[in-house]
Length: 371
Ligand SMILES: NC(=O)C1=CN([C@@H]2O[C@H](COP(=O)(O)OP(=O)(O)OC[C@H]3O[C@@H](n4cnc5c(N)ncnc54)[C@H](O)[C@@H]3O)[C@@H](O)[C@H]2O)C=CC1
Ligand SMILES: CC(=O)C(=O)O
Image 1: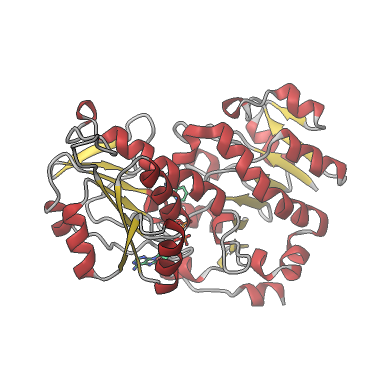
Image 2: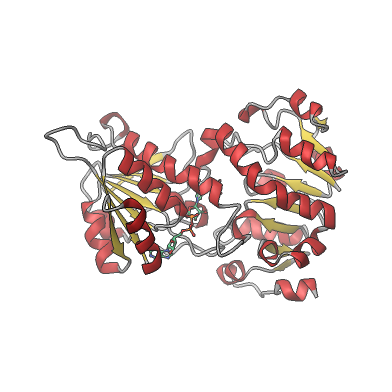
């Protein structure tokens, strides 16, 4: 198969979908890898390192898209990229279609076969979302601590406090991969930490691994309201896979937070879990203030730590890219029911329930497509 690796164009998106090591793996399996010129630079991979691994460097983005049977990316396509796709082309990337009606329509019009990293499943986990959720969960505490500093609009408190002065209260809504990684960092920095989740099993697990360093809280609007009020740093980390994030933190709750408190809504890529998050921000202008509270809603947080993130992402994606390239997308999806869950759009049809529901479009099931 001819696989094209496109250079990302999103604000401060420094990741690339394939490392030179991943390139070599595909090449050794007999595939052709085309890499857009300077696609790896932001992650510290030169064009020469890709050539050494067996790739061809293509300077012209359009030529790369025209020649490739499968395009590998990190982020969802942006408007300037929509026209580059052709009918029947495989797109393997994060898609997050539920909050994106225009992108969904563009992929349907172009009759692209869109396989989304974030909805692929294995043993009840999301193996291609996990590595970036680990990164974003850890970063959420790092950026939250920064935003709590006075020069960045915060109330001027140190997450861990100091002897004789109490630490900050971190409240995490959603105790999955992002939530657990955020808790790990916040505990490590000496903050008081509460994690809210709707799953008793998950809360039990968190209680076990954090051994009393984290307060676990059952998710309901009463408890969320109580804890939001107390939060110096609130982290949004819920997910209903492939669907729009539920708005669990309401405007009224945010109004009860102290001025200079901080919200980091990691779930922004699925539309956001906090009502007062009314925009997606970028790494170059990451925050805004509403009701005196600093809001951070960057949808590509791992793009800022691109070297770590690119390595972690390729570690996870390469085996799936190889399956698709070796067997062809249809056979690969037939052979792996978890990979089949990644199919979001196919030849003008929506094939993922959460996306069909979000845009009120008819659903064609993956089973129908693969029959
Ligand atoms: N902004 C960014 O750059 C990034 C964003 N993300 C996003 O972060 C979000 C979380 O991802 P993961 O932690 O990997 O998901 P996950 O599936 O591991 O965890 C989600 C958690 O939310 C919980 N949950 C669902 N409904 C809830 C409710 N009503 N109340 C309380 N908890 C509830 C689930 O029980 C689960 O434990 C996703 O939207 C993901 O796409 C991930 C990486 C980067
Ligand atoms: C998960 C995702 O959208 C990201 O890592 O940017």
